[in-house]
Figure 1 (cartoon, protein in one colour):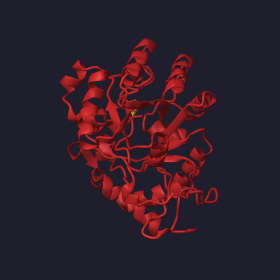
Figure 2: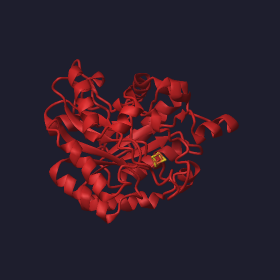
Figure 3: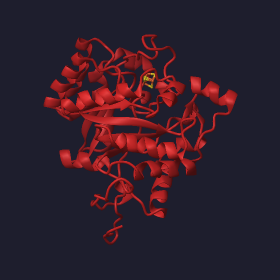
Length: 339
Ligand code: SF4
């Protein structure tokens, strides 16, 4: 490394938290929203049953702390208000991003989407939106709506793309192509809309070399942020059945931490890291057991970064990370959108 300030550590990857602090001059947290929008991969439009790993109930944001009955009877505004009350009591100075997390949040009539997003933005504390969706659910009408939103608020579109390999995506019943992802990032880039890609490590048939290729593929795309997600087997999913019948080989914590660092080393250094792991509630997690402990996973990744004295983009470009801060100051979003 070039330099380490006394008492501080070099940040070895580009934290999204730093971006938010720069943008808003304050801590910014998210309020997760369940707009009860379905998915073309579940309702039969593209496929049935959804992605093999998908378990809607695994999202551990505020939506899970509230009873489904309440949520179904509540609108976006109720959920935002509840989030502000809950988080505001803990962190009084918070500003918020409304995170449309569950389901495919561009898969509804345009007037419904318009109403949802504008309802969230009515709150002065809400300074932006994160909209999680599939790459094949971005019609020109939707892109126009996103463009309009992007002109008036701080917008991120989160696109699920478990793998850069169609074959891997087929295995998890993804029901869209890698090209769908590439095309949608072009369309969003044309409108200057920020994109966060959401990838999964530990898919069957994907070893360390494939992980490196995945990072290099992502580095060549029109994306500004990424979520890196370890594969988790949740209860009542197709993946649970496959896992139990075929003993699906899952990564150990050490293997995941090392693959995650392999990925970071081969990722463009300007891409913000929004997340380094996936975890869900213990009661819904089949395997791996280590995944339920978010901070244990993050600490294992930090340890590998230190042990290997390495950093994001090391093998792609010269290091550009110049911000110094304790790892413990980092704030990570807890979960990614289901896509
Ligand atoms: S992960 Fe996303 S794309 Fe896959 S089934 Fe669930 S909602 Fe649909």
